[in-house]
Image 1 (cartoon, one colour):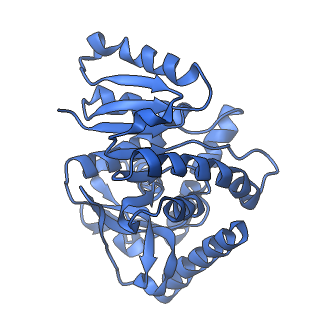
Image 2 (cartoon, rainbow, N blue to C red):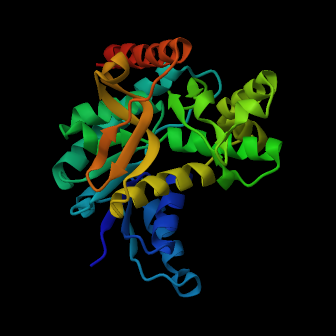
Length: 307
Protein backbone atom coordinates (compact mmCIF):
# COMPACT_ATOMS: atom_id res chain seq x y z
CA UNK A 1 0.00 0.00 0.00
CA UNK A 2 1.44 3.36 -1.04
CA UNK A 3 2.11 6.06 1.51
CA UNK A 4 -0.01 9.18 1.38
CA UNK A 5 1.39 12.70 1.18
CA UNK A 6 -0.54 15.93 1.54
CA UNK A 7 0.59 19.08 -0.24
CA UNK A 8 -1.15 22.15 1.14
CA UNK A 9 -1.09 25.01 -1.33
CA UNK A 10 -1.77 24.46 -5.03
CA UNK A 11 0.43 27.22 -6.35
CA UNK A 12 3.38 26.57 -8.64
CA UNK A 13 5.65 25.03 -5.99
CA UNK A 14 2.95 22.88 -4.42
CA UNK A 15 1.68 21.63 -7.76
CA UNK A 16 5.19 20.79 -8.95
CA UNK A 17 5.91 18.92 -5.71
CA UNK A 18 2.74 16.89 -6.23
CA UNK A 19 3.66 16.17 -9.85
CA UNK A 20 7.19 15.04 -8.99
CA UNK A 21 5.96 12.76 -6.19
CA UNK A 22 3.42 10.90 -8.31
CA UNK A 23 5.62 10.72 -11.41
CA UNK A 24 8.22 8.92 -9.29
CA UNK A 25 5.53 6.69 -7.75
CA UNK A 26 6.72 7.75 -4.30
CA UNK A 27 3.26 8.08 -2.78
CA UNK A 28 -0.36 8.97 -3.40
CA UNK A 29 -0.97 12.71 -3.11
CA UNK A 30 -3.71 14.95 -1.79
CA UNK A 31 -3.31 18.46 -3.20
CA UNK A 32 -5.27 20.83 -0.95
CA UNK A 33 -6.07 24.52 -1.30
CA UNK A 34 -8.75 26.95 -0.11
CA UNK A 35 -9.61 28.14 -3.64
CA UNK A 36 -12.24 25.80 -5.04
CA UNK A 37 -11.44 24.32 -8.44
CA UNK A 38 -7.71 25.07 -8.45
CA UNK A 39 -6.43 21.94 -6.65
CA UNK A 40 -9.06 19.75 -8.31
CA UNK A 41 -8.21 20.98 -11.79
CA UNK A 42 -4.45 20.78 -11.36
CA UNK A 43 -4.62 17.32 -9.82
CA UNK A 44 -6.83 16.06 -12.64
CA UNK A 45 -4.44 17.48 -15.23
CA UNK A 46 -1.49 15.67 -13.61
CA UNK A 47 -3.50 12.45 -13.27
CA UNK A 48 -4.34 12.48 -16.98
CA UNK A 49 -0.62 12.23 -17.77
CA UNK A 50 -0.26 8.94 -15.86
CA UNK A 51 -0.59 6.67 -18.91
CA UNK A 52 2.09 8.66 -20.73
CA UNK A 53 4.47 9.13 -17.79
CA UNK A 54 3.94 5.58 -16.54
CA UNK A 55 2.87 6.12 -12.95
CA UNK A 56 0.01 4.60 -10.98
CA UNK A 57 0.19 6.77 -7.88
CA UNK A 58 -3.13 8.48 -7.23
CA UNK A 59 -3.43 12.26 -7.06
CA UNK A 60 -6.56 14.09 -6.00
CA UNK A 61 -7.29 17.77 -5.43
CA UNK A 62 -9.57 19.05 -2.70
CA UNK A 63 -10.67 21.99 -0.56
CA UNK A 64 -11.75 19.61 2.20
CA UNK A 65 -8.82 19.42 4.58
CA UNK A 66 -10.19 16.31 6.26
CA UNK A 67 -8.90 14.45 3.19
CA UNK A 68 -5.30 14.86 4.40
CA UNK A 69 -6.12 12.31 7.10
CA UNK A 70 -3.62 9.47 7.16
CA UNK A 71 -0.85 11.45 5.46
CA UNK A 72 2.63 10.42 6.58
CA UNK A 73 4.13 13.69 5.29
CA UNK A 74 2.51 17.12 4.93
CA UNK A 75 4.21 19.72 2.74
CA UNK A 76 3.13 23.30 3.47
CA UNK A 77 3.57 25.68 0.54
CA UNK A 78 0.48 27.83 1.22
CA UNK A 79 1.03 31.53 1.76
CA UNK A 80 1.42 34.94 0.18
CA UNK A 81 4.42 35.77 -2.00
CA UNK A 82 6.68 38.68 -1.19
CA UNK A 83 5.81 41.68 -3.35
CA UNK A 84 7.89 44.79 -4.17
CA UNK A 85 8.25 47.05 -1.14
CA UNK A 86 7.20 44.33 1.30
CA UNK A 87 9.58 43.67 4.19
CA UNK A 88 10.26 40.20 5.56
CA UNK A 89 8.26 41.14 8.64
CA UNK A 90 5.30 42.30 6.53
CA UNK A 91 5.38 38.94 4.78
CA UNK A 92 5.69 37.11 8.10
CA UNK A 93 2.61 38.86 9.49
CA UNK A 94 0.53 37.94 6.44
CA UNK A 95 1.68 34.34 6.36
CA UNK A 96 1.45 33.76 10.11
CA UNK A 97 -2.33 33.67 9.78
CA UNK A 98 -2.10 31.18 6.92
CA UNK A 99 0.23 28.94 8.91
CA UNK A 100 -2.08 29.06 11.95
CA UNK A 101 -5.03 27.84 9.89
CA UNK A 102 -3.00 25.19 8.06
CA UNK A 103 -1.42 23.75 11.20
CA UNK A 104 -4.78 23.58 12.99
CA UNK A 105 -5.94 21.27 10.20
CA UNK A 106 -2.70 19.27 10.23
CA UNK A 107 -2.91 18.80 13.99
CA UNK A 108 -6.53 17.66 13.67
CA UNK A 109 -6.34 15.38 10.65
CA UNK A 110 -2.69 14.26 10.34
CA UNK A 111 -1.36 14.22 13.92
CA UNK A 112 1.33 11.62 13.20
CA UNK A 113 2.75 13.30 10.11
CA UNK A 114 6.12 14.84 9.36
CA UNK A 115 5.68 18.48 8.31
CA UNK A 116 7.97 20.11 5.75
CA UNK A 117 7.45 23.88 5.60
CA UNK A 118 8.19 25.83 2.42
CA UNK A 119 6.27 29.06 3.18
CA UNK A 120 8.43 32.16 3.63
CA UNK A 121 10.04 33.64 5.63
CA UNK A 122 11.11 30.08 6.11
CA UNK A 123 12.72 29.87 9.55
CA UNK A 124 9.97 31.95 11.15
CA UNK A 125 7.18 29.96 9.49
CA UNK A 126 8.81 26.63 10.39
CA UNK A 127 9.04 27.72 14.03
CA UNK A 128 5.45 28.99 14.12
CA UNK A 129 4.30 25.72 12.51
CA UNK A 130 6.05 23.74 15.23
CA UNK A 131 4.52 25.86 18.00
CA UNK A 132 1.01 25.61 16.56
CA UNK A 133 1.23 21.88 15.84
CA UNK A 134 2.42 20.75 19.25
CA UNK A 135 4.42 18.07 17.42
CA UNK A 136 7.88 16.90 18.51
CA UNK A 137 10.45 19.27 16.96
CA UNK A 138 12.01 16.52 14.85
CA UNK A 139 8.76 16.24 12.89
CA UNK A 140 8.47 19.91 11.85
CA UNK A 141 11.22 21.46 9.75
CA UNK A 142 11.74 23.77 6.82
CA UNK A 143 13.13 23.37 3.32
CA UNK A 144 15.73 25.98 2.43
CA UNK A 145 19.28 24.79 2.71
CA UNK A 146 18.75 22.00 0.17
CA UNK A 147 17.67 24.61 -2.38
CA UNK A 148 20.49 27.02 -1.52
CA UNK A 149 23.02 24.18 -1.78
CA UNK A 150 21.63 23.14 -5.17
CA UNK A 151 21.90 26.67 -6.51
CA UNK A 152 25.41 27.05 -5.07
CA UNK A 153 26.59 23.77 -6.56
CA UNK A 154 25.12 24.71 -9.95
CA UNK A 155 26.81 28.10 -10.07
CA UNK A 156 30.12 26.58 -8.95
CA UNK A 157 29.82 23.89 -11.62
CA UNK A 158 29.46 26.57 -14.30
CA UNK A 159 32.61 28.27 -13.07
CA UNK A 160 34.61 25.05 -12.72
CA UNK A 161 33.17 23.46 -15.90
CA UNK A 162 32.23 20.19 -14.19
CA UNK A 163 28.98 18.41 -13.42
CA UNK A 164 27.01 19.82 -10.45
CA UNK A 165 27.04 16.25 -9.11
CA UNK A 166 30.79 16.54 -8.57
CA UNK A 167 30.38 19.54 -6.25
CA UNK A 168 29.68 19.07 -2.54
CA UNK A 169 28.61 21.97 -0.35
CA UNK A 170 26.97 22.78 2.97
CA UNK A 171 24.89 25.90 3.57
CA UNK A 172 23.77 27.06 7.01
CA UNK A 173 21.77 30.04 8.28
CA UNK A 174 18.58 31.53 6.91
CA UNK A 175 17.31 30.69 3.45
CA UNK A 176 18.22 33.23 0.78
CA UNK A 177 20.09 36.43 1.48
CA UNK A 178 21.30 35.33 4.94
CA UNK A 179 22.58 31.92 3.82
CA UNK A 180 25.99 30.92 5.15
CA UNK A 181 28.02 28.63 2.86
CA UNK A 182 30.81 26.75 4.61
CA UNK A 183 33.88 27.41 2.48
CA UNK A 184 35.84 24.65 4.23
CA UNK A 185 33.12 22.11 3.27
CA UNK A 186 32.84 23.15 -0.39
CA UNK A 187 34.70 20.64 -2.55
CA UNK A 188 34.98 19.29 -6.09
CA UNK A 189 35.48 15.53 -5.83
CA UNK A 190 37.12 16.08 -2.46
CA UNK A 191 39.34 18.95 -3.64
CA UNK A 192 38.63 22.13 -1.64
CA UNK A 193 37.19 24.71 -4.01
CA UNK A 194 39.08 27.45 -2.16
CA UNK A 195 42.25 25.85 -3.57
CA UNK A 196 40.93 26.38 -7.10
CA UNK A 197 39.03 29.68 -7.05
CA UNK A 198 40.21 33.03 -5.80
CA UNK A 199 38.53 34.39 -2.67
CA UNK A 200 37.01 37.16 -4.78
CA UNK A 201 35.47 34.79 -7.33
CA UNK A 202 34.21 32.47 -4.61
CA UNK A 203 32.54 35.44 -2.89
CA UNK A 204 30.90 36.50 -6.15
CA UNK A 205 29.39 33.02 -6.61
CA UNK A 206 28.18 33.04 -3.00
CA UNK A 207 26.45 36.38 -3.62
CA UNK A 208 24.83 35.13 -6.83
CA UNK A 209 23.53 32.14 -4.88
CA UNK A 210 22.10 34.40 -2.18
CA UNK A 211 20.29 36.33 -4.88
CA UNK A 212 19.34 33.18 -6.81
CA UNK A 213 15.62 33.50 -6.15
CA UNK A 214 15.58 37.26 -6.74
CA UNK A 215 17.39 36.78 -10.07
CA UNK A 216 14.61 34.46 -11.23
CA UNK A 217 11.90 36.87 -10.04
CA UNK A 218 13.56 39.69 -11.98
CA UNK A 219 13.72 37.58 -15.15
CA UNK A 220 10.15 36.33 -14.89
CA UNK A 221 8.75 39.78 -14.03
CA UNK A 222 5.80 38.06 -12.35
CA UNK A 223 6.07 34.97 -10.15
CA UNK A 224 9.06 33.20 -8.65
CA UNK A 225 11.00 29.94 -8.78
CA UNK A 226 9.22 26.61 -8.52
CA UNK A 227 11.22 23.95 -10.39
CA UNK A 228 14.30 23.94 -8.12
CA UNK A 229 12.32 24.51 -4.90
CA UNK A 230 10.03 21.58 -5.66
CA UNK A 231 13.02 19.35 -6.42
CA UNK A 232 14.51 20.29 -3.04
CA UNK A 233 11.28 19.39 -1.24
CA UNK A 234 11.04 16.04 -3.00
CA UNK A 235 14.64 15.20 -2.00
CA UNK A 236 13.55 15.64 1.62
CA UNK A 237 10.38 13.60 1.06
CA UNK A 238 12.40 10.75 -0.43
CA UNK A 239 14.82 10.75 2.50
CA UNK A 240 11.94 10.44 4.96
CA UNK A 241 9.90 7.89 2.98
CA UNK A 242 12.91 5.65 2.30
CA UNK A 243 14.50 6.16 5.72
CA UNK A 244 17.71 6.82 3.83
CA UNK A 245 19.46 8.84 6.55
CA UNK A 246 20.43 11.58 4.10
CA UNK A 247 22.54 14.43 5.40
CA UNK A 248 21.13 17.71 4.15
CA UNK A 249 20.56 21.24 5.38
CA UNK A 250 17.16 22.05 6.86
CA UNK A 251 15.57 24.70 9.02
CA UNK A 252 15.59 22.67 12.23
CA UNK A 253 14.73 23.37 15.85
CA UNK A 254 17.87 23.87 17.90
CA UNK A 255 18.10 23.16 21.61
CA UNK A 256 21.63 24.20 22.46
CA UNK A 257 23.43 23.06 19.32
CA UNK A 258 25.80 25.76 18.04
CA UNK A 259 24.97 27.68 21.22
CA UNK A 260 21.47 28.39 19.84
CA UNK A 261 18.16 27.52 21.48
CA UNK A 262 14.42 27.78 20.90
CA UNK A 263 14.37 28.68 17.21
CA UNK A 264 14.44 27.04 13.79
CA UNK A 265 17.47 27.86 11.66
CA UNK A 266 19.31 26.21 8.77
CA UNK A 267 21.82 23.57 9.87
CA UNK A 268 23.03 20.19 8.57
CA UNK A 269 20.75 17.36 9.69
CA UNK A 270 20.16 13.69 9.02
CA UNK A 271 16.69 12.97 7.63
CA UNK A 272 15.04 9.57 7.97
CA UNK A 273 11.66 8.02 8.70
CA UNK A 274 11.34 9.94 11.96
CA UNK A 275 12.00 13.28 10.32
CA UNK A 276 15.14 14.96 11.61
CA UNK A 277 16.98 12.13 13.31
CA UNK A 278 19.88 14.29 14.44
CA UNK A 279 21.39 17.73 14.07
CA UNK A 280 24.99 17.56 12.86
CA UNK A 281 27.09 19.99 14.87
CA UNK A 282 30.09 20.93 12.74
CA UNK A 283 33.12 22.96 13.85
CA UNK A 284 32.70 26.56 12.69
CA UNK A 285 35.18 29.39 12.71
CA UNK A 286 34.42 32.56 14.67
CA UNK A 287 32.91 34.46 11.74
CA UNK A 288 30.71 31.54 10.70
CA UNK A 289 29.46 31.02 14.25
CA UNK A 290 28.67 34.69 14.67
CA UNK A 291 26.79 34.80 11.37
CA UNK A 292 24.73 31.71 12.27
CA UNK A 293 23.84 33.05 15.71
CA UNK A 294 22.96 36.43 14.26
CA UNK A 295 20.57 34.80 11.78
CA UNK A 296 19.00 32.83 14.63
CA UNK A 297 18.59 35.99 16.72
CA UNK A 298 16.84 37.78 13.84
CA UNK A 299 14.42 34.88 13.36
CA UNK A 300 13.74 34.59 17.09
CA UNK A 301 13.04 38.31 17.42
CA UNK A 302 10.62 38.18 14.51
CA UNK A 303 8.77 35.23 16.03
CA UNK A 304 8.49 37.11 19.31
CA UNK A 305 6.92 40.10 17.56
CA UNK A 306 4.36 37.85 15.87
CA UNK A 307 3.26 36.02 18.99
